Amino acid sequence: MDHPLERYALRPVRSPQEWSVYHAIRRDAIFSALLPGQAYDEHDPDEFQHRHLPHALVRDGEIIGTVRIDLVGEAQAGLRLIAIRPDLQRQGHGSVLLRLAEHAARGLGRNEIVINAHPTSLSFYLANGYREGEWRDAKPVPANLIRVGKRLS
Ligand SMILES: CC(C)(COP(=O)(O)OP(=O)(O)OC[C@H]1O[C@@H](n2cnc3c(N)ncnc32)[C@H](O)[C@@H]1OP(=O)(O)O)[C@@H](O)C(=O)NCCC(=O)NCCS
Image (cartoon, rainbow, N blue to C red; front, top):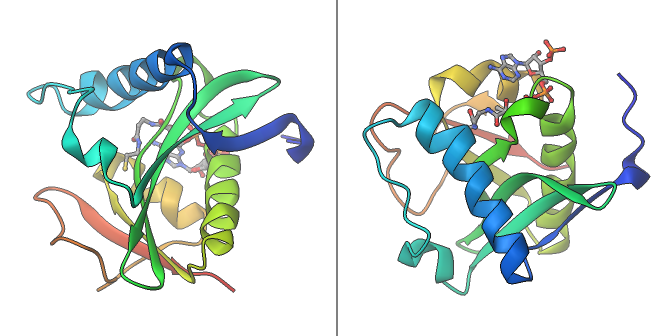
């Protein structure tokens, strides 16, 4: 599938309307689908730390995906709660999101990405150049998730 990058942007979430789409995508794609016992909290303090940067994937002006870029230590970025709107998954948008998030991380002076992957998405990360291993992160890997990472060239 062809995904001309000029149709996409990855940028910080801004207006109240954008925040509501951001939360809806995370709630539907991750919490309802993968973490049924875990309530989604829009006011989780983790969202508001100054080194945690909520971003939206925009395609043709519409928000279709989410990622929070967390600055970890001096040189790492953690990508958190990566999600593509459920009706648009498996069309290549997630791979575009990763490329743009890696670019943004480089722009923030980062040379390494770390992700705590849900097992159902492991093959997505492997297909995008991520590898399992002892990648540095702010906290230990949560139960039932798999740590993957990538060195940025
Ligand atoms: C995981 C997710 C972000 C991937 O985004 P996407 O747009 O669906 O993925 P892409 O279309 O770019 O997939 C690229 C490739 O990854 C691989 N892949 C394997 N298993 C996959 C899976 N369960 N979901 C997506 N891709 C998968 C495939 O090789 C796929 O290419 P193909 O569709 O041609 O076979 C998205 O499916 C999603 O939001 N899932 C629910 C939430 C989630 O799991 N988030 C990650 C939590 S760590």
